Length: 274
Image (cartoon, rainbow, N blue to C red; front, side):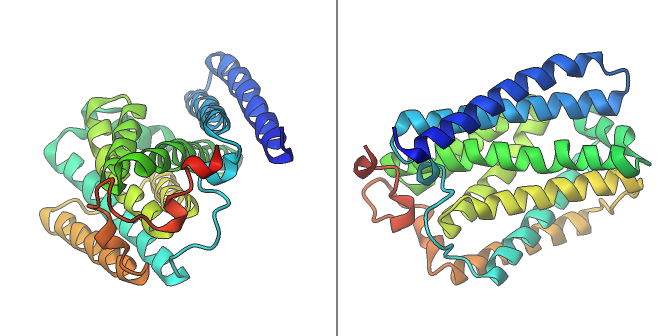
C-alpha cells in the first residue's frame, strides 16, 4: 500500500468514526439548531468516508480519482469567480420560484430560515461550518469527485454530469428540495468539468451554502418576483457561458458521448490507474 493510500485510509477511517460519534450525540441536543447542525455534520462526515473509500477501492491513486490532485485548473480566477456568481444567481432564482409557487412551506427549506434567524457568534459559526462548508466538501467529493469522474471516463461527460446530479438530488431526500438540487447539481457538474478538478464545484457549493446561512441569520428576505427570478437565470447562464469560453471550449464537451475525446484531467479514472 502506498503512502497516499495509507493517508487516504486513515482519513476515511477518522471521518467514519467521527461521523458516527457526532450522529450519536446529535439527538441528545435539546437545542434545535445544534441538533440540526450535528445531524448534518455527522451525515457529511459519513459521505466523506464513502467518497474516499470508493476512491480507494477504484484504484491506487485516490486523490486523483476524486479530482483533488490532478494538476492546475483550466479555469482562471475570473472564470471561477463567474461560476461562483452564476451558482448564487441560479440558487436565488430557484429559491424565488419556490417562494412564489407557495411550495417553500412544504419543505424543510421553508423551516430552515426560521431556525437560523437572528443567530450570532458561536452558534452562527457552528451553522456556517456544519450547514455551509461541510456539505460543500463532502457532497462534492462524492458526487462531482468520485461519481462524475468515474462515470465520465466510461460513458462520456454528459452522462457523468447527469448521474452525479441525480445522486446529488437523492441525497437531499425531500422531493421538492431534491428537484431543485438536481438543477443546481447540473450547474456544479459543468463547473467541475470545465475546471478539470473538484475545487471549482466545492467553491461554488460552499459560497451558495454560506450565503444561504448568512442570509437566513440576518432575517432578510431577497426579492422573489418573476423579474428577479428571470434576471437570476439570465445571469447564471451568462456566467456559465463566459466561464466555458475561458475554460478553452469545455462547453462543447458537455454533450460528448463515450467515444468523444475527453480532456486529459477527466480521463484519469481509467485503466492507467489500476
